Length: 261
Length: 245
Image (cartoon, rainbow over all chains, first blue to last red; front, side, top):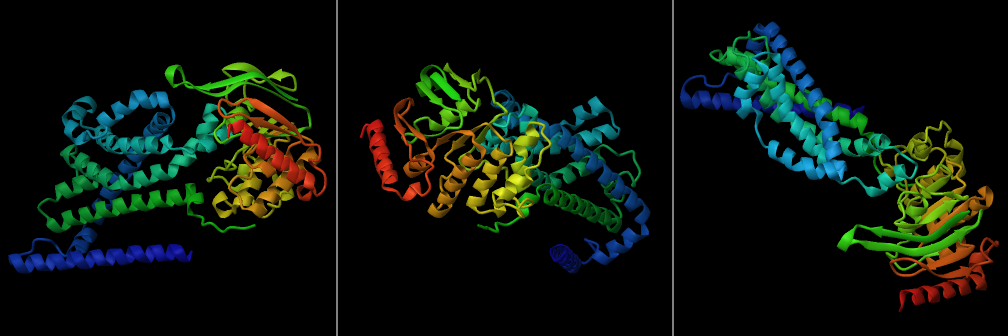
């Protein structure tokens, strides 16, 4: 409980520091350039409050979009990554293919994705899924390659089926690495979400996602910046959710050695 | 009863083939506890894994209670060198792992209590001492109530007091439960303390080069007797001979 309180306090402190830095940069730019360049935190906050309905709708839409993309990336990427990492035959044949596709930015394929999936919701999801999918695949594959052999022997000697080996050993052994990779990928995922919402949503209103909100209010710096803050908070939200997920699902990682007799 | 006839195990194929066991034969009577010793890397663990059905012989055959071993058997339990505990499972879940894999509903609570692990059921392996981890590994095997127990260096890398404690525990369990056991070890005193017979293996590829009868095994206070010391010395000579040095 005290630990949770300390974490929350640390986050609040970090936010205060960011707001102070932001205010400082805003003031410096205004002084040096003689006009407002970067709206101050309080002006932005006031703009956010004035447009809270639209902003909340944009935040909710983006959050749901990101959640679905993350879930799909996990559902597709985790089994593939684990199988490729754990089964040496699959590793031999599929790894080169993964490494070839992995560095390819989905944004570079926007035109083809648009032609393939149209300009609807699906294409926006596909862009984010593609970015997160390879992160999950590569992390799962890497972790599954280095599973301690005695852990597999322990379940095999009990007569485990292939499925039981995955369930009792491969999945739990790799989950911490996969969740860490997913947390690291939140930043990339949010960037892709922003691109998908701006480039593939030009006809939509400002409530159709934070990317669209920022784009829609391009000429209202204070409102637009409120959208950027929304994106940062969205990233933070998923970062925290994934960290909490790791603490719950990988509880064993967070217990210390106590010894005994 | 465990029988192996002309057992050969070869890793890899073609030019990269490494024979680990070559034409090995052995017989372990029912309710007998036998130690297997040999030079480092001679194929002791490979032999044990073959007896467990984890490795398929390249040639020869293994029979347990008259039935040919073609895979893992439910009446055979294996204790791994480092206990092979899964760090993400609690002590209880680790002890019940083999039971659950076999679809059995029994609890390992009683076995854990007998091994002095009551109260630690909800702990994770990282919270235990090395000796406790080994006991959980033993509990996992015992929970299956096996007729055959295969042990791969169950006391390796333990301090001497904990090692003696685990050795006494294994001996006590053997008396109490009457399983047929094969213990692979590189510790000569352990081999003499726990083996009614001691099989000495050759350097790789392994085959049995000597069988030492050890009638005093299991006698109270055996560890402190001159017979014990003499048997350890005898075994040391046999091992040096098998190693060709």
